[in-house]
Image (tube, rainbow, N blue to C red; front, side, top):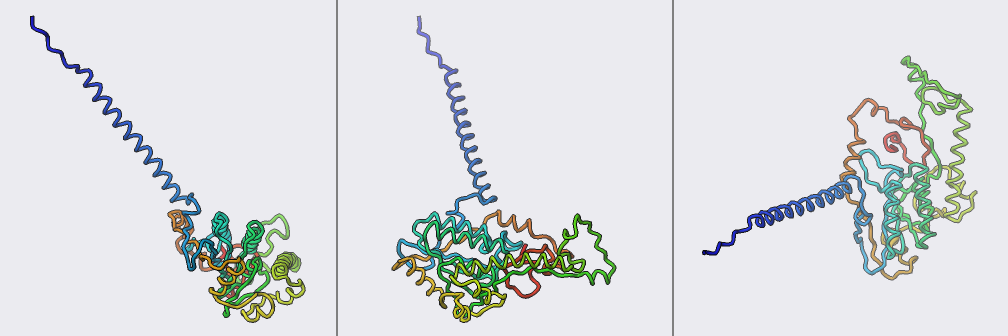
Length: 347
């Protein structure tokens, strides 16, 4: 009797084929999900800016060598709490300064900060926050801060400078303007001429204080002057403490006038005149360094910045014709900036 030939196990072939397909789809799904998660994370980071400070602010060497560093930080433009509409660069904002300062605090090789100020001032709160951040850094890290003034370092720009260990002014710097301003305009006669009537309803006589549509009463003026005086006294005390100067002497200098670099040096408002190279040498000397790398942080533009611009920019409208001082909303300013520009720079 012939032996039967062994039959092929068709079920075994089918099993392995199915298993192979299942494994393939499992691995494909796994890698697809991983890519989606990674892509979402990257997209979220790109759009929202949620990334490490080391990636957001790239370190670049300006000059010098060695392990120790001096951080070059710039405060430029109007000192404010938020970016302006068209320029979301944050060199003059509280948030931008805080981020760079945090980056500096995380780097143990940084021995001093060289703060370049190119600003006519800005908001009183923004100026005071940056001032306080500098003082806290000096106390917590026991490191030196040197200010180098550019073309203009006035009002709020000088307020911030008072927190530094030393101030170097460029020979052509304009500084000073120690004081407070509350930009207000009054168009009551203009609107009366064209038959416009303000029918605002208030809960009290002082609720619409500073209104541009009616004359200011003596009582309202006294209230505003009292607030201005209080903020002025704070400014004076900051300068007196920072420059180790009697309050009465500061008040003689703090009538709002601006000073040349030479005049500021003679009055004790700055420590020396010089250039960037001089400020770097002073920073190295005060930090006890023979050599150091001078570094600064370059912020990367992200998609979130472009989206912020898109949100802030609106088509030209009639309201833009009236963007004069005080027309957005009244605010106290440590600011020296002649001309009708306050309405568009403080947003």
